[in-house]
Length: 93
Image (tube, rainbow, N blue to C red; front, side):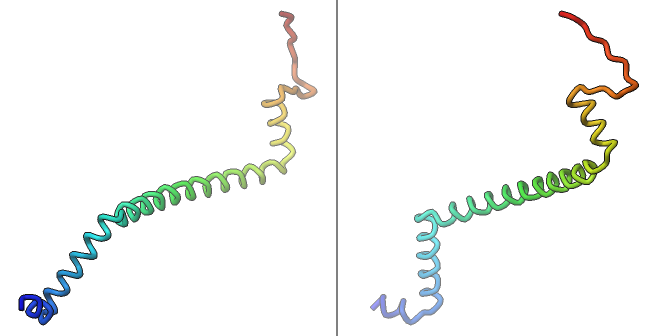
């Protein structure tokens, strides 16, 4: 008899189904999986923004690399080269 009264009340059936769905998602780890996916999404978005900045910086460096004076300065700084008018000291160890 009580089952018949329960089945005739749509609000009680809705509450029962909702509570069953809520318990089911909590027990199978659906909420934790969703939380993990959202955390991964935010991390990936921050990595994408950093990589876009790196691409922009490298694009600027590539534009500057076509300039002969930039190439000359890089050769002098990184390869320890000297220009024709520079005075070079050599020390023996």
